[in-house]
Length: 134
Ligand code: VL7
Image (cartoon, rainbow, N blue to C red):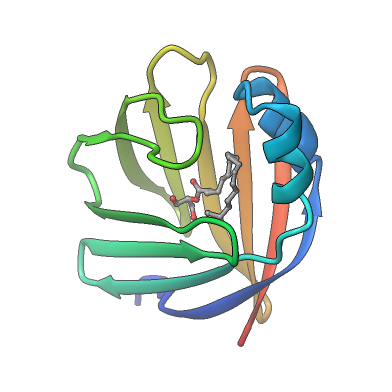
């Protein structure tokens, strides 16, 4: 049975989010606000279709895609850079590669016990986030 990421998840830890945001070129004032946030993720997984809605008191970001199918991502409200994104399974991990101006950009989601993990990568920076079920 495949892993099911569906659910509502609250951020509980956020390691090196600052480094990740600097690598993305997010300005100081925005970073100052962003690092105070405790975003929530609402994930809906239906076969190969996924939607990941990241919400916060400051900004929201919505992503919908089909696993294995490349799509255009606009990163609106984040760094606003367009990229070509592809999400695939690596065993029980969901791996996204975001091809664009920034090297080595992407993320990986996996479950560990009752926790949802997210690694966000950009250039030489790695941010590690952990979420718990709401
Ligand atoms: C999405 C933020 C920093 C701008 C605001 C921060 C608002 C809440 O890509 C992401 O998740 C994937 C995997 O779950 C699905 O889209 C992470 C947040 C990254 C990057 C940019 C700071 C301003 C945070 C939306």
